[in-house]
Amino acid sequence: MTALTADQSAEQLPRPTRLADVKGWFFTADQLMFDWFLARQERRKEPGDLLELGAYMGKSAIFMGARLRAGDRFTVCDLFDSPAEDASNSKEMAKSYATLTRRAFEANYLSFHDELPHLVQGLSSVIRTHVEDESCRFAHIDASHLYEHVHGDILAVRELLRPHGVVVLDDYRAEHCPGVAAATWQAVTTGGLKPLCITGTKFYGTWGDAEPVRAELLEWLRSREDLWHEVQEVAGQPLIRLSAKGAKEPVHPVSRHRVRPGAPAAGLPHAAGRGGRQGRSALRRVAVNVLPPVVTKAIVAARNRGR
Figure 1 (cartoon, rainbow, N blue to C red):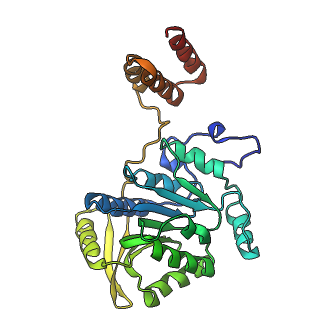
Figure 2: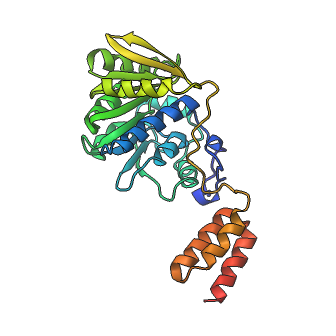
Figure 3: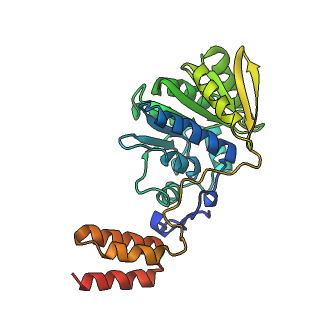
């Protein structure tokens, strides 16, 4: 993903055809864990919304959006192009996210989903003015790496999560993010956060009853020959450590712009055969997503002449 010029819009940006095309750090083990936790909540019909603090180019948000249920709200908070309010945070933004823009996020997200999540452009510290307390079932914290900000994000998410909600903390062990590690383990030792599992890059925990979740996760891990795991004890609590080297990534989400063999031939007659506005809309969606622009214009023009 290249930096945007001032006159570029989301519609003009390159469209990723698979999740791997989206710039960012969201590895197989965490894709599997996000999918497992979100699928478990869906299976158990646990109510609640989704939340992400810190989005970068949208890779994990795209993945979370694939598990969004009808009626759920997905809120994504990021500075995007806005300036940070303090010097240290501004320095971090300039160093790590120089090419980040809201339009790049939107273009990537809309390559996989029909609608954007609810976007909050600003510091993560404002999130409680946009999300109701005890409304979320799953929250991903990946915003600032500075201790005071991460500590504040954890405190906010604790209030925003439902009683058995799951929080995920990124970069809890990276050497360039000691503030994240300090805030994470402080939440465990003094803040009541119960660890569930860790991967190489993310920590998963809950302020609810952790034991049933751990038991189900262990049962699932034992059934997976492609995943390695062990159980350690941290601060008097079990903690599952896992690795997914060699495991395959989940098959979803699938880009709306992926070209599949035979898709145009199979899709166009079906869409054209529908009557009224719905048929014309379906035809346009197929044409825009699959065919070259010159072919798209010809098909739509012919369709309009035939009204």
